[in-house]
Image (cartoon, rainbow, N blue to C red; front, side):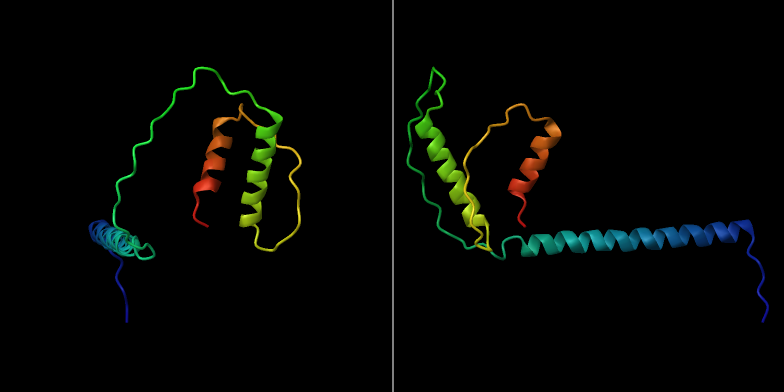
Length: 120
């Protein structure tokens, strides 16, 4: 059985057909993934009846609130409680000091937000 080499036109046709098949396959995969996301989007959520939130007046603060020792103690307690809730192994720790970082670069803020808002 002998095979004959393809000429340029035939090889170009095989290439175009192959690329079309791959493009069609990728399009089908994209469609299936988007459909799967739509189907499973509300799978774990419970539907609750919508209730109107009571109107809460918002007070405008004209002066910045000064940090006091009491506010810092409350902040440390809240942060300690949040970390304890997130830790599953039950290791003991104590938060002694909290330092605010206000001059973080954009990439650092984006990294923090990614960690905060990621599901897992």
